[in-house]
Length: 319
Image (cartoon, rainbow, N blue to C red; front, side, top):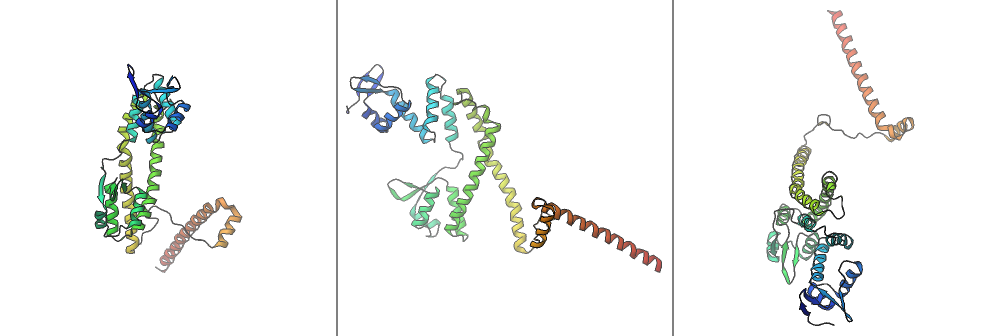
């Protein structure tokens, strides 16, 4: 059953299943599994063999592309069924391409092992390189053991500057892992926010209609830079605030929490806290302490006023 493709007819090339597997890069087992799931059109039965055509090859390549982009077989089936029903996939595939396209203007670069050692002062050993590959800061180039792909040259440059400033590579890697988790949370929240208020109207159908998907793709292009712009602005604001606090702390500058408009925790003896909790309950401890403090401040202010008044009266009498 294997061998060269069957002779062409008016509908184009014909393939046995082994030939279709070779042309598509899929395995025979995978092709049969796709057939069972309804992802591939039924082949033509000719004698004891199934005959596949160019439409099957195109469909296999399309499935492979969508799988590479992170889609599940169930969602791919929905997309393909919509296409087969005549709803079109142009807008949907445009949306897929827009979302999976680059979210930065930065271009990847390559770097040699020797250049890495020069950049990090010889500190980039096998263990450090393995960790950088695990983090995605470096990617190995097949067949080139001494060369690496750098997806983000800016990120690598930051690591080099931090290391030159005296920060050990393990500390930089640990910081990147922590930072990445926080940034991924920000990205997730931004997507939830925009989906709720913007994209929900385009994604009401599963899969979306061709026109809705085209409009959503255009909206992605408009909103793409906003996430980075908002993060840049907020990061600048936060860095200014916290850098000032750190500087004051290390220079020994005293700054009242009241002047800063903030609050500062106050430690109370355990017996005091337990007595207040027994009196008003655990939920009301903070409110009770706040109210008692304010009452004490008011009482002291009245005592000060009264004392000042008495002193003035004595002075007047002496005069």
